[in-house]
Image (tube, rainbow, N blue to C red; front, side):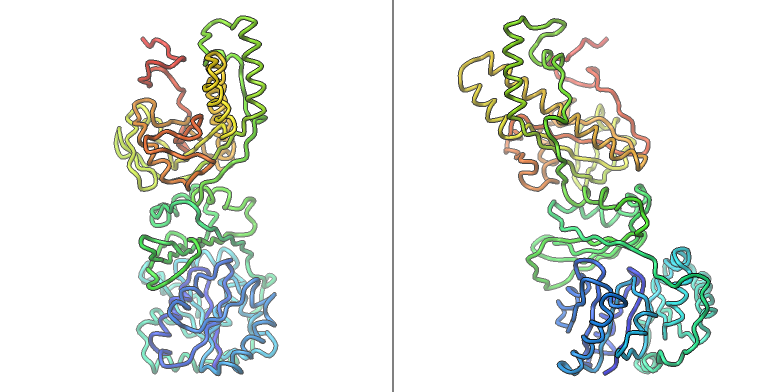
Length: 526
């Protein structure tokens, strides 16, 4: 039984190489693959098992450290129970070859390293001693993505690798190798090298963190295909690697991989899977904040904690809702208002949430958010001209207060019903204001600004386009549903669109941009 390690940094193409070998040189061999995925979801293992290959997964740790003894035991068990011709070990892209080769009772015959040439300079900046060591301990290096850089740059990288290990075998395109050439690769053994290169610093691998997300909201495929590098750059290029399984139409599944600005996607034919779509990301552990703080709202609509105590409520604003423009209610009416306000605040359970999406302005009247076309008219699109991304925000006073308002209407006391309705309007607007203020504060550390919020039904924006906003949210998000006639339930709910960007500014609301004639705040515009 031959045991080989196939190593490469995140996104270098290890699983692609395994697929190639199993379809060519090893197609008539009995092969077992040991997968050690650093993410919570073994996407590589799922893809390989779907092709009916023998895959053994080692999770909850790295096989070069916490699982090193488990790896030796697993290889021995495979040999005794399955008797394969070959065992291919695919460690995570963060594993140390030196630690792997020193595992007791584990005989590794060779190590093939895959190097994405576009990542070479990055690796040399990240931890040059560690990656020189990795290359030195390899029997063969396969260069990948050579077509993406000039030939002279490939030659420069090759010369650099040879200077690390003069006996190193370097292959630019393993797909062109014939069986005889493959035989020569397998014959190169780890034992040929006994001398280690000196190190100027401690030989420790760079530390990375990983997180896996389950996608609960509708998928914005354009975000992964075209917008991810731009958005990652906007937030400081925190994420160095992402990959996932996405459910497409009619139950089809595809796998996507992102490394730097490179995106690839392929359909996994015949995959049957009950779980939801997932995405795993990797980033440098020394980052001050996890990128999940900004990435998660792109993947899933996010509900934000909110209570009545968070809301800023003004009696003056409430009086305006009630029609007291430039005046105050009499003492009897004032006492009634305060009594109902106290009850409303006790009942109200505000809910608030948002979803990030990419987008762009098409012309004065049209913009695309996600992959949906909106027509909010120029009075709104001009406020979004400098947006780098968008947030769909929804807010509600909660079902409890909405039911109370409906009860007041059915009781027949017109005055109480009128005040209750005004309180509901005041509270939902205060919830939106709190949500916008919170979002603005969250964006400040990233040097991003927010626009004001704009909603269908105002400023000439057709209210039916609420359906497009809600199409990006999971059903009953924040307890809000949308009827066929575009009425939100609870009735005291709001949906809106917010622009986010480096140079965007909050344009003040003004009557000059709104066509509503029945607004209580309406002013004459000259």
